[in-house]
Length: 205
Image 1 (cartoon, one colour):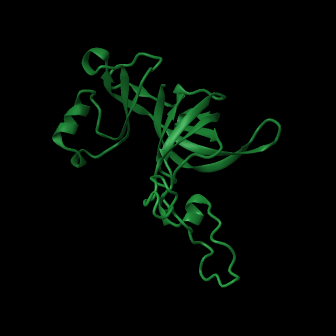
Image 2 (cartoon, one colour; image 1 turned 60 degrees about the horizontal axis):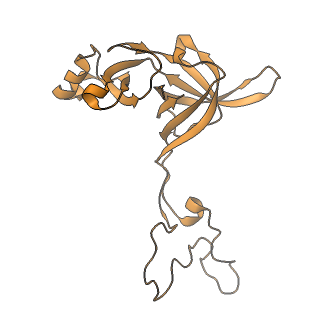
Image 3 (cartoon, rainbow, N blue to C red; image 1 turned 90 degrees about the vertical axis):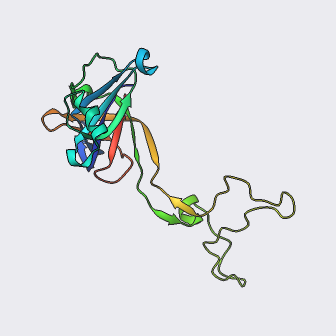
């Protein structure tokens, strides 16, 4: 699947031809630089490595700097590989938001918002252990029993319990491209995209 690397700018809404207000997410897509071309002969598979957003050279090692010199590119902050690119590119080529078309559907991957350590009510939608009456005390948000007694004498893996919530890679499928603003490298997608503003996103089609 071919695609591009971008950054989430925020959300807004636009009106369609029927006058309906549609919520959408604004993404800054590219321009991305082709930093490496992988082939079956050298790497065992075909892929394009794209880089997005310049990084100061003093923040990278000499080895990484040499990797970008091969494509005559400045170091990039975000690198992603894409397989099955439909067009042929050379090292150093720039791929912009014009790679996409209005009306097509794309898949978006990004890290979701981190919500820290959360209990079972917020993390899994538990309803708590009964009401506050009949002698119950501070049990409204408790997880309840987590396993059996002497048999099997353990808690099964995957038990829904309290813990870290969010901050995970999430992919949203089939979001419609509503509008492309070429001069500003912006793309408007229908609906919401994972992550906070300025989160790096990968859009594939």
